[in-house]
Length: 361
Image 1 (cartoon, helix red, strand yellow):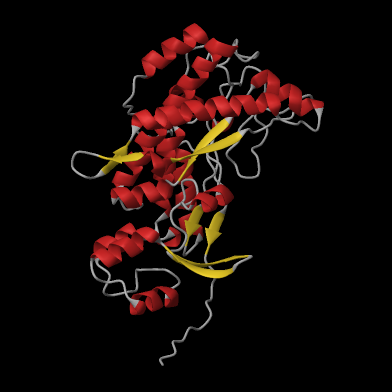
Image 2 (image 1 turned 180 degrees about the vertical axis):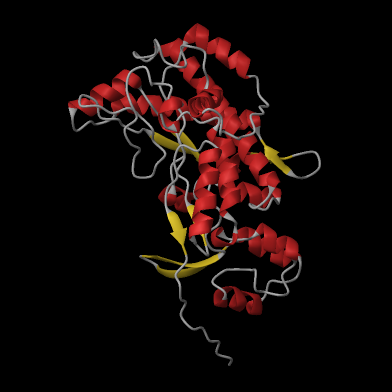
């Protein structure tokens, strides 16, 4: 079996034949059931607080409250939704799957001053997603206590006391090894396991990280778990065209006395990249590396740490500036070795670029 099916909490009642377009949904489908994804996302950067040393850390209490509210909202959506066909309605009401994800991951790294291409970022991905998943699963048990278990709960992995991170062992057994991932945890998963055994789950699936391209743009954060695509871009709407610059980069450049019209012109010339600009310090170049400047290995390592907690999957773009057969082989083998269920687009850069020139007044 593939990782999606081996790690599926609902493998007792069906097969995951495919994902959705964005690859974060791993739900069973059949001739009689059409899977429905009921999605929502938490703005992760809104759940940071300043610690005693002035640095930013996760606000676990606020995150718990937000996730609990979000899970209740998504469970309500299942009941009040419009269903075009009976197969979708019946499936949704029977299993009650939802997919709570995150957005603003890159914003968190900027505030915490952690480069995306770093072990610190991998650890933050691990601990932040552990917290989101823990609170989501806990909220589902509370809803089960209040509203009842989903009808296909008996026989599920939840019912057997097997949580999503436990399924890494199942995947390793299926493969005869070949799953290399840090299995450390920081929260009391045994307490959650015991609660599920007592009260069950309201939802067959709880967590999925969707792309959030539109909603993240509306609230002004980077999409889902993506690295910043560009530090400067032109935004168009009915009011006209606007040049948008990474707010965190501008803040840091101003703090160091480097923000001026020349810097803005340089950023425009280099398509928002800070790497070719000599007067930008090395620490800021690391912190504000854009998607194609981050080795895809780091994107996969962070995704793998998230994946161990997630009961569905994540929409994971791979960015590769200089795609080659060797690099593709290394990247996707690493994704397989880390037990990832899915990846989304492989994005590469064009082979040629238009000639650029500057005009001095």
